[in-house]
Image 1: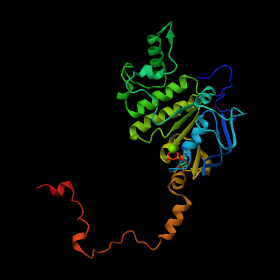
Image 2: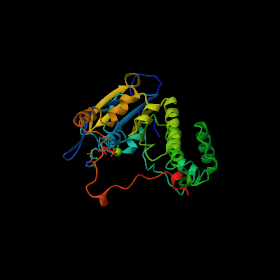
Image 3: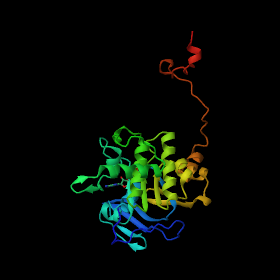
Image 4: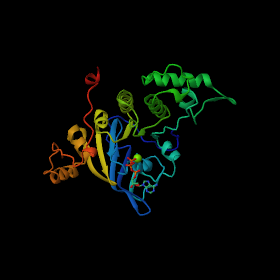
Length: 295
Ligand SMILES: Nc1ncnc2c1ncn2[C@@H]1O[C@H](COP(=O)(O)OP(=O)(O)OP(=O)(O)O)[C@@H](O)[C@H]1O
Ligand SMILES: [Mg+2]
């Protein structure tokens, strides 16, 4: 939650002042250059999608924003003020919340206890469970999240519902920027849809959303701005009106590299098959359909 003393990232929907701005940011781990010359701005009321293959530097980028790692080069500003965040708490105090894939939810604890974990309301020495249960219920309802019994342990909920609780919790506790690290990676189509809906709700509430994903289709469903990283560098930075889903998908599939590969493989006929020299090593006959196998 933000404190009164720190100027938090101000969320004025539609404002053109970035909440978070990175300019030429670099990060090295010993000899490994995980990020080089990365510039990125996060605006309120926008979903900024960060895409890239494994090892592209996505997690490193969000760890800098989340206060887990300090950058080695360049400038990182929150609300126009240059920062070198020393801890996740420092990031939270500036209104930057991160929802990691493993979520930091306690599976055996109830929904409302998880909602207030680390920010419990007390009455004297005791937890004010009635108030916490009521607020958790109101906040989840406000986001259109229907869990039913809030005394249920979180471990029994679906992956999508857990993500939604983490998003609602971050918003309630004053986040202005919410970073989601691959929130749909482990989910099926329907559950991903639910999470994408809450990403759009967080954006509509005026937050700056940073959505990390491998999936250009998910990114394009909710994204206003797309940044593709490759080997630690930004290879594409485009607003929604500057790129189509097909172009984004092609960029993620390898872009120029794929075009070069296609050129190199121009003599290869994918329809061709080679007769086996040894019948015993020949591939098995194609499987018959279930209908054919019926007597
Ligand atoms: N703590 C670390 N120490 C050394 N090298 C690291 C460390 N963290 C990341 N790296 C390296 O930095 C590069 C970027 O890694 P990063 O985890 O940021 O990529 P990513 O885009 O999140 O990948 P993935 O999609 O696999 O999660 C990789 O080469 C990785 O091996
Ligand atoms: Mg990662």
